[in-house]
Image (tube, rainbow, N blue to C red):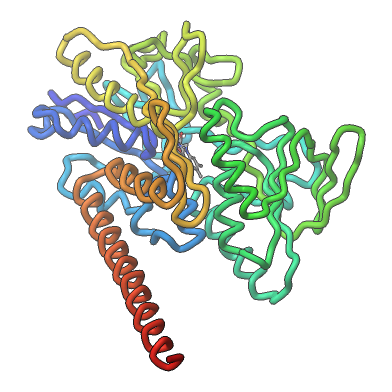
Length: 416
Ligand SMILES: Cc1cc2nc3c(=O)[nH]c(=O)nc-3n(C[C@H](O)[C@H](O)[C@H](O)COP(=O)(O)OP(=O)(O)OC[C@H]3O[C@@H](n4cnc5c(N)ncnc54)[C@H](O)[C@@H]3O)c2cc1C
């Protein structure tokens, strides 16, 4: 792949860290002129804006809005897209082995391959539980929901295991989608949901779960999952609860491909990087997003899109700097706040001590995310759709007010 006189930058993973690094790099004149070549390697053909994945359950958003194809996103950019699975990374020889037996060599490498589901050692978990991270997970979940809805049965039960943001957001959306047909249980072994989040976010979440009658099982361990029930352990008590669907959203872990790399890693298997986001032993390799951890930092950064997205900007600048022999900058994370969807069109936004919840929060969260979508062209398309939908909603609210008023007037006329 090495073309004479050109510099090859290879980006592995087209998620929040990889895709955004590649796009940031594109604004550099040396990339535009073709002196620096960027190759983005990704196994899927669609990017996935995960924070809005829940909106596909309730049909608030369409798939094209949050999962545009790379072909569409990269149109008109000099980025070369390579849809392949990365099989092996040889840091010593600066070479990447792909599943189709091709190999790529690089001058600079960006590792943005993310993490994978963590499977606890619970009998029946892998066999019976669904997960919720990818478009394929969503398709399986939708198929299960459609099946449950087709049963035309009341008193169904859905169990969600994991009381982090994923579990809370999923509980609210599923409760809204299945409404009176199913009861949602949210199970966590801790004594509260949303560990590490502010009190405002937690309180709004408890309210949202309560108003949707989501049953909270805190201090509860899942012992076993069978086809139609789960065995829970609450204190000394063992309870069998019948369930029609189980979703596991209790954590992530490093991929074996990443753990196999010959470089420093944290106890939890994350790649250790310096403050400039370079691997300690390989300064030409930048590792970011969920798979990396900055060494010598007392507190590790959360595994969020917000961190990955900010690191992408820093990595792109540092790659340009290292090639040009300029000093590199340390990554500084700025926590802008938290946003959680708490049901259809509803969210909580918490930023710098200010909390906005309800429908206004829902609208602001949607807008904030639209402006985080990967390219300007895509942002504008989604924004146009959003504005049209709001226009339709305002018109229908206005129409129902007018109909109501007219109805009242005519009923007064008749009652006279
Ligand atoms: C449902 C859900 C909701 C979330 N909501 C929020 C939220 O509201 N706010 C927030 O800040 N964060 C949220 N997150 C977390 C956020 O998605 C991650 O922190 C973020 O995606 C991490 O970015 P990344 O680039 O490290 O990894 P990813 O975005 O996961 O990207 C990794 C990419 O690498 C590709 N890949 C992996 N292995 C290979 C391989 N061997 N070969 C080729 N390609 C490969 C994957 O297909 C993927 O595209 C959410 C996550 C989920 C699952």
